[in-house]
Amino acid sequence: NTNRGTAVPVSGLPDVVAMAAGDTHTLALRADGTVWSWGGNLYGQLGDGTKTAHPAPAPVPGLTDILALAAGTNFSLALTKDGRVWSWGANHSGQLGDNSTAHRVSPVLVPGLTHVSALAAGRIFSMALKTDGTVWAWGSNEMGQLGDSTLTGSPVPVPVAGLNGVVSIAAGGYHACAAKSDGSLWTWGFDGTGQLGSGRKVMSAVPNLVPDFKLW
Image (cartoon, rainbow, N blue to C red):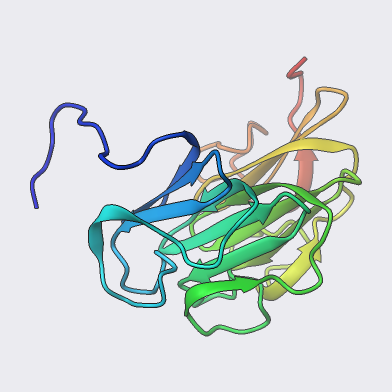
C-alpha cells in the first residue's frame, strides 16, 4: 500500500454523483444507481459477499436504483429511490437495523423502514429522515445518540423523541443533529467538547434546540 500526499484519480469509476467514507472503506454512487466500494473489508463493509479487502472499486452486487449513501465505522447504508434502506458490514451494536448483531457481508433491507428521504451514519449508530419530517435512529446509544430519551441501544429503528418538521440530518461520532424547516437546529448525544452547541457540555438523550442560532 502506498500513501498519497496529492490527489490521484480513481480509475474506472465514471459518472459518480455521490460518495461516502467510513473509517477504512469508501463508497461511490454512480448516475445509473449502482454502488461501488473499495478499501478494508474485515466486517463485510464492502458488501461484495466476502471479507476480502480490495484497493480498486468494484460494484456492490444486487444494489440498484440507489439515491444516497452513508458510511459509519466499518458499516454502510444505501437509500433506494423508493425510500427503503439497505445496510451491510459491522453490526456489533445493531447499527444495521435488522434486529440482530450479526455482521453482514451483503446488503440486507432494514425491515419496516419506508418513506425515507435521507440517511446519516455515526460511529456505530445510524439515522434516517422520513418524508413526514420525523427522524429514526438505531444502533449504539451509550451517549444518548439515538435521541429516544434512553441510553439503551436498539437493533431496530426507533423514533427520535419529539422531532418533527425535519428537513436535514447529520451524525458525528456519538452525537446527532437535525435541522427543521423553520431553520432551527436540534442536537443530542455526546457533548464532551461542546459539539451540541448548548454551551453546557452536558450529554443529552433527547434533542435540544441550539440557542440563538438559525440556519436560515
